[in-house]
Length: 173
Image (cartoon, rainbow, N blue to C red; front, side):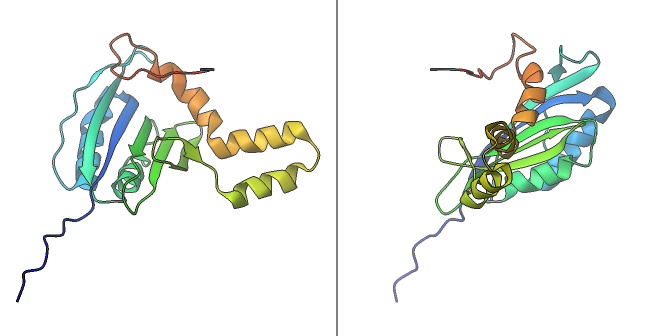
């Protein structure tokens, strides 16, 4: 009898960006993320210049599909955090992006293989129906579907440090 081929469980990958955390909460954030990942984690914290007294960190993670959602769920209880979780699309699984700010709460969007936000057809149809012929209202609805308010609020925290390892490109073209 032939042996069955070695089938590995699908791996999901992504990044957790903690844009701002009070110093007193940093260890709790690591503990919460570690529980979601199923292993202890240690972040390389640095000061967040956009909000004196707060800290920032980036953590590249691997896990099973759905780990991005588990990370976002574990961290959303810490109301004072600003964070993003990304999960890359993989074979048989969509990508995702979770954004959280104290003022707006959490936002989720599906992403494609290169990280673009995917707005489902029913959401676009709902925006069109709700806006009718009002182009300004349609614009507002589409910005909401894309999570623009979360991006606007997080942008100063993304760019606040020259030491930031991530380069964000905007208004290209």
